[in-house]
Image (cartoon, rainbow, N blue to C red):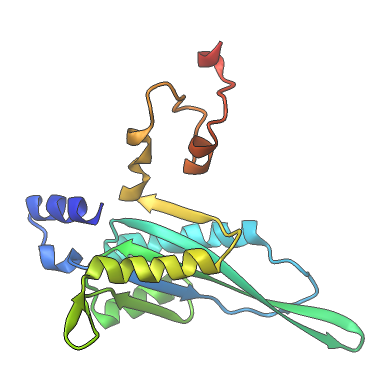
Length: 193
């Protein structure tokens, strides 16, 4: 996917070095104490989609995949149990080099607090051997996909073209996610009758 995006960028005249490496992006928000034992994930996902839209536009992000992770802290104050839900995202994006000032202003405009924007480059290991950038990206992503059991992954931008790879016997109207495609659920629309 990344190479195809780079090829299109080069063909359209964009600087290919800006999208040379995948970016690992972590975004966190301020979290406060509440009496709710579970986080409001529906509200968070809506907020994240809006924030990501700002980042995509300002930073020229081509696409990517996001994993939402949450950690909970509990405390008891005056006999009342309170919770703090640390909801944050770990993402792998096909995104360009972004100057620090633009990165910081984009994150602020999107309402994001602490953030990391790491370029996944080649990495040296074991006395001069080099791990290719794609393997560095795979290691990063695998770490978070296995760490966040039961977490939903969100795909956006250029990566959403997965329907092009569906078999022709599956209904493109009813299947809206890769999970539905993998489950091979039967179509219930008028095309199936």
